[in-house]
Image 1 (cartoon, rainbow, N blue to C red):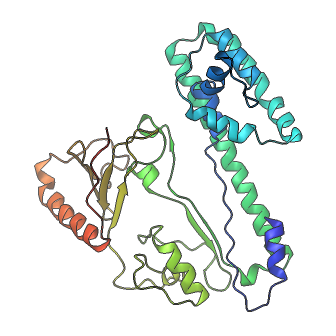
Image 2 (image 1 turned 120 degrees about the vertical axis):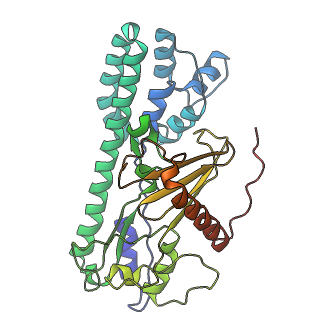
Image 3 (image 1 turned 180 degrees about the vertical axis):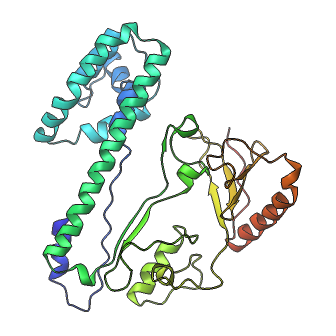
Length: 331
């Protein structure tokens, strides 16, 4: 990351540099350990196949505990992460995780299904939050470097994410649903001289807006066929009077490893309507009265007019964004 920024210093002062750094806090290695203890390696070794990426420790643990392989997704995560570590990184990993794994081996024979569920949750969440802390450290490193090199005043820093993440809410982890925990995303901006430090906005923004925002900041013409809006006036506290009053959401990936049914929805800041269209199931929430979205009010006659209005708004947004009809579900 620092090398990338250093390279920018050698460019002409009139050159606009766009640098995107990515950090994933999902800790796929933790998912791998928690879910199946890496079935693909086990299957390859059991079949007598030569596989240099097979982890003998994992195979040994699975055999000792009598754990049957159930999936190969976790295996790929294990291989792509642990398999590319340097010797130093692997040593640091083993110092932390081998004792934890050995403790798990000791407890496993006497663990009930509930015990195992709680262990998985704690292990996954602690790993996830540790990764979040590492992301925070990385952002701090980037900001410190910009300050130290005198680049801060001429640099816009944007921190965001694809979706929020469940930490047990609704009984889930991961993301994908339109419920608020994953529907919301972080969006922080540092732009000296243009964005007031500590200022906030409750306007409706979405990731469709990022491209237009960056083009606007760089003084580049925004193509007419792009569907977002520049956030520049919002960030400067000058939100246009005709700013959007609702948001559209759509999740398509099913069937797939996460097994979240396809759905779409609309949110107007208070009320949220969602449609799991393959199941023909509707849900409706009043977030002022039910901010955790625990009880759908779709069949409550008191909200009939509100639901009807949101269905109309849902159709309007689908037309605005040229949303195609869903493809037939592959079962």
